[in-house]
Image (cartoon, rainbow, N blue to C red; front, side, top):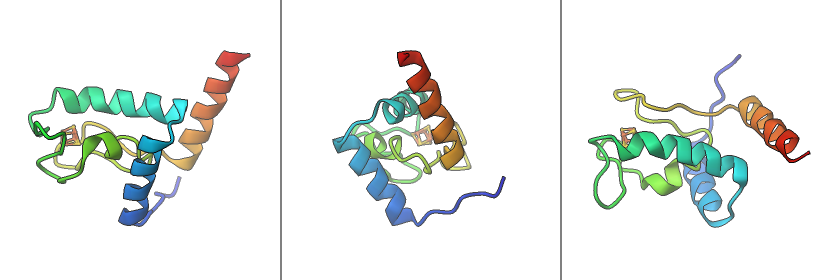
Length: 94
Ligand code: SF4
């Protein structure tokens, strides 16, 4: 599959939007990602990453964002991946 490119500002916007307007699928992705950040020596006490400088509560909620390649603890979620996760979540409710 072709790598999906997104403008960095759109990634940031998506993260902050999802921090304010919560979505159960995004929250699951965020919690899985944040588990890695919690045990990472690069996470500062103000919840920013010392490598990318991002505020992690927002960044983990941006599907297309990923942990910096030099560390690579978690990756981006494609549109198709997100669609599959939404189908799985919906089927649990039935
Ligand atoms: S984004 Fe990656 S490098 Fe930064 S704190 Fe999280 S796990 Fe660590």
